[in-house]
Length: 327
Ligand code: TRP
Image 1: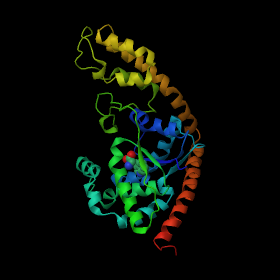
Image 2 (image 1 turned 45 degrees about the vertical axis):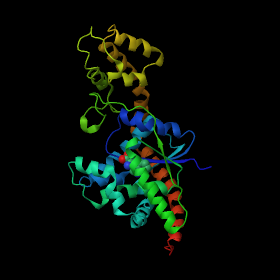
Image 3 (image 1 turned 180 degrees about the vertical axis):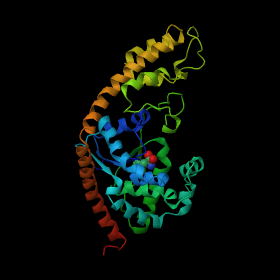
Image 4 (image 1 turned 90 degrees about the vertical axis):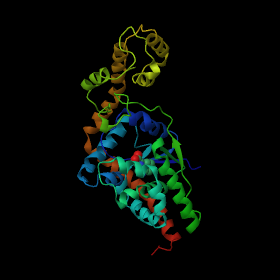
């Protein structure tokens, strides 16, 4: 039975808790029951960061280091780097021939990101982002693609391109399905979405000395001005963190204490700072192991890319045959 999973992340900087609870934890869970391929989408990083290509190189091992620290296991999952498997580029080219530009121009993510970005994203490569993403996925013929909500339009495009390919050249690619990651959306320290650009993130690799001040600076229920005012956990940015990191048994007590003003926000912050440190400790210990052995890290990326390439080459042999390009 095909239970293969493929997913990728762009190497744009260190991972924060939003990435961890939103996507990475799922990846770690899934490696136990599925054939997983997880890759660093370094070419995709160029679609927006084409003016600073030099930054990408350092971010690739950084990202893999975060993955390993979080518990991805190269013995269980294939961890690789997109640009080391050139077959993605060849398939992207062939798929670009059959993808109507209208589909890409209508893509909501394309319009949104292009309008909001300070960069000039009126490029061919940025428009074609979902075509490359389609190639990344279907080249391994997976059943599932675990992604966040924001990636659903891209996955729908992948399925449309697959249908068109199959219609033109014969039923070959299975239509991959999105596997929505169910995890809670974690707000940033200030209550907005956790994002590098907002400076409101806690990173997996944040030094322990910064964790406590960051937690102490978190915004809680803004309607609760004084200690004697009752609060509402549902309106507190800190509470979702406690739900993830504090023992579930004590949550009712915390909620009650907040609503009756018996418990202050400082108490919750102190508790969270402690639980956050406990949570990050083993992750950071694993990270230190890999940081001390950069060659091992490199070997993992190279070996994983070799395994992925062997699979991608089989697909490309078939695809070239289907297009009569098997010279
Ligand atoms: N677009 C994804 C993101 O921004 C990254 C990505 C590239 C990806 N190729 C992929 C995700 C293939 C899943 C499958 O997060």
